[in-house]
Length: 154
Image 1: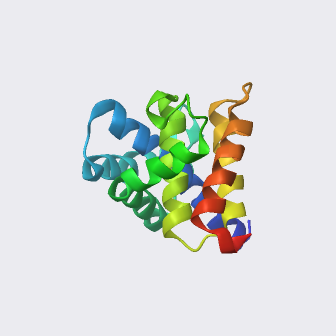
Image 2: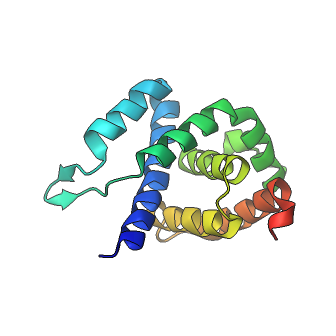
């Protein structure tokens, strides 16, 4: 496997882990530090039932989780503006809420091209909701968020 693909896989894994960590923090009221420690020590590269978990980009993981927590109000407001008025972020599925927070952190606080962010998080939505309409919903909301957060990138 070539180095660029490995690097890309590590970034993709970090995004997935960030969504999982944000979900876990909300569900269990754990601190950022304890969840980051758990993921870095026990999930990155772990083996479960002969399935090896991917290694994640620790720097990207920490930045996304930290930014999602530190800028949560800003990101939630941005997300709310992309949602239908009857469905504020507090009413949506907690997995999707974690996904929008992680994606919003990357859209608002990184140089990653918005199309890359959108594609990566739509893929994560497909992993969590393989049979549902959620990936299309995620695509539409993230497109709205990206156009507002980074209008010059389009």
